[in-house]
Image (cartoon, rainbow, N blue to C red; front, side):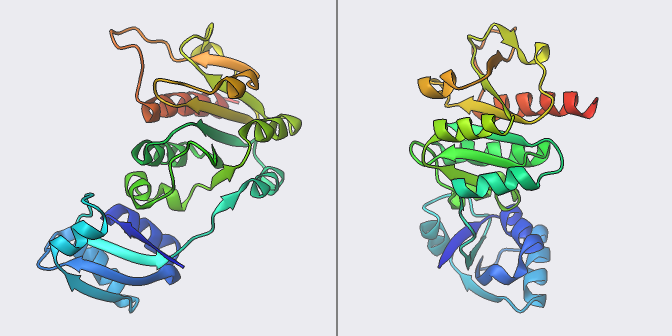
Length: 246
């Protein structure tokens, strides 16, 4: 099976990681962008078929998204499932850092969260099968290559997965504006799963009930909340700061 990815960053990242997965490339006729030309030169050196096409064809293929003049058809990559989680936990030498996204349905937000997760060295991102954005071309474009480096594990039952993590001594820390303790007052060292809920609704009730503790991000301005990917970045990098000091 094959799938479509688009955008210079997404294609460059996949090219660096897996050259063999490319089937063909569709390039906008007359595009002279320097970054794009460098990428095309790499693709040509590998013998990957490049087809010149119109902007209308590219726009239709990605349903009007910003493709930067290039689309790639690639072999479908491995889809991680919940049975992949336990081997990942067992084989990690360092204390695992996991990101759990509960109810993130916007592919742009999912892509941005994956980008934050990659930057923070997260070992895996966990999402429920239901009420969760798909790892599609839009997600991969926004992730700027992070979708190719961070395992995205889809689970049928998120509560069961949280119980599994607890059984393996992973601390489950949920984020909510109503928490009594903020991230700077919390110990985020050791095996950790950070749970981020959807914008507006937050975590689902059962997810919240299975967290070991709840934390918040202190807000001192006039806005009451942050974009979900911004909140993810703030929390992950506070965890990284604490863990780097140990």
